[in-house]
Length: 251
Image (cartoon, rainbow, N blue to C red):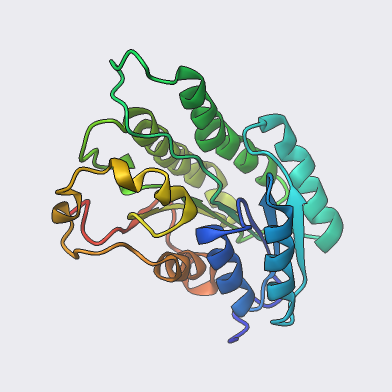
């Protein structure tokens, strides 16, 4: 630990597994107290909290469904009630419904609507709820996707569009919150070996990795390191930006 985030409080949505758990661990290693959210994995969330607390920081798991935008205010209230402040928000929770073209007669419109609810409206609701409560110089970082900048194959229209929407919202929020020195950025990872990716990796075209300059998946640690940098004291002049961590997929 180098304690660059000592005294700070971070919220990581979808922090019970995969990239979210890695982000929570990286922030804790810098000394931040961390709240994570989960929907169904209470046991996994408790394990993440226990691991974080072993580093010497305070941690909390909160059950909160990002697909219900009305819950965002309650979530922020719980974090502030427990820790007394909120400095960093990482919007990580997401769904990935991919594989079918929009003209496929068997497309699952209900699932795609749920994806929009979680990936866009839920993120927007969290940012809106957090913004008035964030401290001066706070940080908002949303996890996007390289597909938000480059749709490299068919069957991912709604997912890509949702991630692109977050980029636009981020740029607007950066303007709105700049007077308080709050930075707002998007990190766009490449494909990672996570539970969420496992559900869509088999739908990728065989040539997909050939579209990357570096022909491998990203690691969650690589992505978490960039997010932690943006959350830290050296990133105070980076805002409204999109940072790609996708091996050159968007190059």
